[in-house]
Amino acid sequence: MNVDSGEISKFNQLARDFWDPTGPMSALHRINPLRIDWIESQVPDRNLNGLRVLDIGCGGGLAAEAMAGRGAQVTGVDQAEKLLMAARIHAEDSGIDLTYEQAQVEEYCAEHAGQFDLVTCLEMIEHVPDPASIVQAAALAVKPGGTLVLSTLNRSLKGFALGIVAAEYLLRWVEPGTHRWDKFIKPSELAQWIRDNQLALSASTGVTYNPWVQAFALNPQDLDVNYLMSARKPL
Image 1 (cartoon, rainbow, N blue to C red):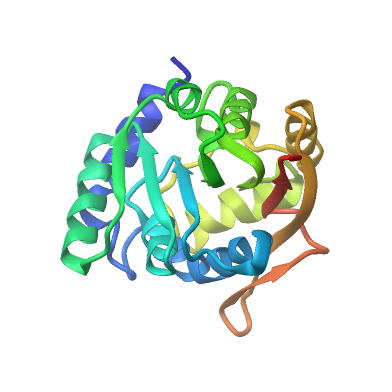
Image 2: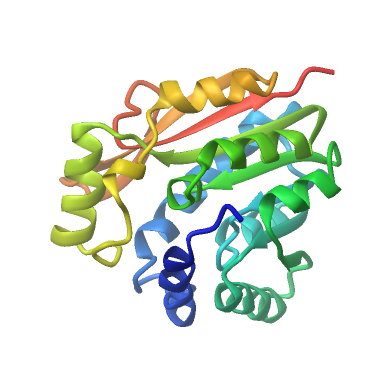
């Protein structure tokens, strides 16, 4: 199985405070609206309403719930049982209708091949032993004409300095040890995995942080740290 049990255990420990916007996932809460806006801009008609969406590695449901709030029919899959429980409870409390399943990604996508208008996998592939296998599975789940959106961290010196040293040890946005630099993925590598699965690259953008105004922004010219990439499956 393409799962790191240590990573699952680590993320399960975040379940209790996952939905606290000032807690250990505060940075993710702050960038999530930017991510969802960009994801919506990548689908046909720039509208998530009515689309069937699969969110791979959904965690506590931050992105999944936001997409469902925009009218998408969302299924989130993850292996972290406690995070999924936190996701289900928050969705129920919020009155948002979506589905969460504990499932092995490759198996789930093989069973639901070509069924989703949009497949997302955000901040997840840098935490598994074989990220290329996740990209292959995600691509399989996208229906012809559908969209794939992935996000991860760049294995660059800037990615190490900001994604680990600053984010984990100086600013304490996430717990120390959350990331491993050697597991980060260069945009060229991710782009090649996408092309290997016969999808056409559409766009990419970086997530940047301005310490002077303490704000995140999207910058298509700066993929050095955290970035998103979208692709389309041909009809």
